[in-house]
Length: 185
Image (cartoon, rainbow, N blue to C red):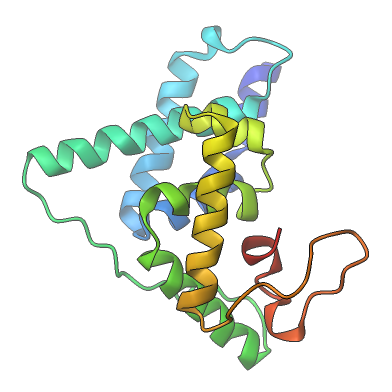
């Protein structure tokens, strides 16, 4: 197997995590990842060496998801948004499990364009520049959507205004420790 194919296959866990959070549906998640991988392998000659493979794959996934949603809307199919995931929590701390469940429910209520940015930056740890490239919008739009999305999440989770400025030496309040990457930045 050549290096490109190995790099593509190495991104499958991240692709699955993003697809699961984006679609909120196990079978749609699997279909989206499969469609993304098929497209990436068919178009691997278009990937430019020296560029970010993960960003390229996430761009393909984003476009595949947009096409699938448009197709479903055109066919009049209902898209299940409220399917709950019992696989999100991998901890024995019951308060952490409750917080993750609350975050999952709140994310479902945030507009999709804000949710996409929150997932790319907060969950996947992508830079604003990479997220902007994936979603084909300016970096300023990423910042705006991220800020509005985080504010909406805080409100939906009853956390109020952000009280801690981000930074390497800033401890997070206890109640936001589990969701810090998504809610604080």
